Image 1 (cartoon, rainbow, N blue to C red):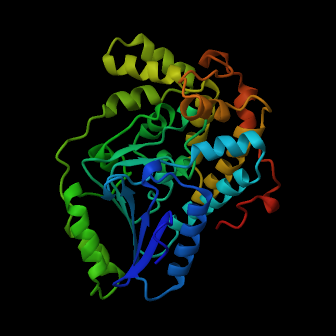
Image 2: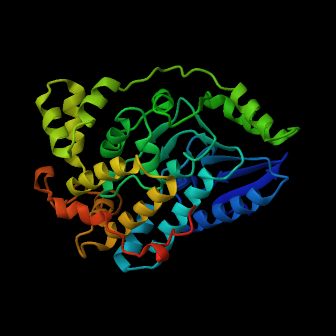
Length: 363
């Protein structure tokens, strides 16, 4: 087991590799060091026949569970991007490689998605074989609020949500709970939060004949969410099937219903440029493999920081949210209607030839 001060606690108990993200004051936001430790640990366990499965949880402020992972460490991203720190490039390359490893791990990977599960937290859980949500789950891909896009494979897993829920989740960054996560295919089972410790301890107790027996135990604890789905699937599909962001906003603003008005207002707060980028991302990703999507996202994230020197939507979005905290990002262009095609098309031009791509090795 790693030291008590480590941001990633890992141990093998009863043939289960058990990981606790241990950065509770930051809601377990992922640092480069955490990404590297997770990668090394999972690679070792993938090759270890004594490890039948992996379970991962977050440490809350009052003990285990309560918060899974709020995403990547955006303050680090802002500082590194502003200073030209090459670790910015390392972070995204290694994080996306970690996401790919989880999707292709080959053993049961059980994610206890309790509390906040956003951004990079989705990246280290969506590839799991058993994604557990609770009544406390707050799930989102809120990147358009900081001038980014739903990365960590977000194009891949959001585009595979039913109907046009993927476009809605990606563009608005709206938060969903357990029942909606199940409905949209972003979770596999519901477990009351009070029962998580008992399941974690049962996994650690061992006695499993094989990996399949681990999955049987976990699934035997699932129940129905106490609160039903809250999202209007029909409305989501009607508006978010429209061909452009401009068409979506115009239709939403023309509809008097509260949900439409609220959704239009949300989109008006997001980066206009990145809304256009994100819609194209989700629709391209529907026809891609995971590795293809992650390579596309690696291209996109390079452009987020370096395509327009001095005009990074991402640095500006993080500044407004987490650095100066004025919550008044100065987006450029400032309105959805002002975004020109060449501005967002450029995000999909790869900076690298295929053989030299940082994620060329992904299968």
